[in-house]
Length: 157
Image 1 (cartoon, rainbow, N blue to C red):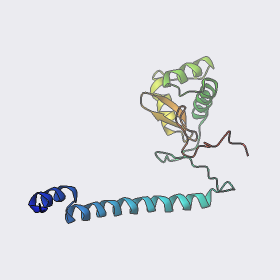
Image 2: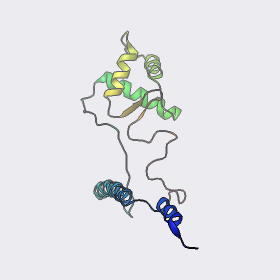
Image 3: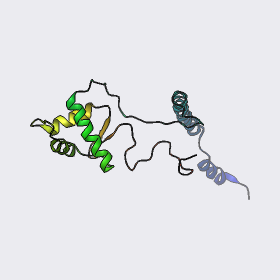
Image 4: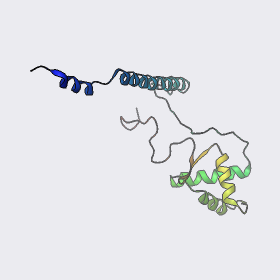
């Protein structure tokens, strides 16, 4: 019995069309181009921040902030927030910062929560996430792995 048309129909469902293959090649080429651009940027960053032995420390920031001169009120807010985060080892809410400042005897306006929230937003030292609170801008959020984590051991060489 010959192969006949049944075999050809079966093969056409297994082998993608030339157009499908060309689309797949275009998609993969685009992804490769994006990956190469990212790799090039990472290499450029690594060359500027080389920590020796091929290790690079990378801190990713989501947005850039304009640095403003610090005022005494801003410094008080930053110090109170940092003290709470260091003590509790977790992100903190705006209300917790307000209570800490009140406990320290800092002068706070009537709308203290709004003012403290604005100060934290304008500080380059902290980063806020809706529903989670405030955390140090230069540290990974608790519970999140750093981008380049030592998975081989305890990190000591």
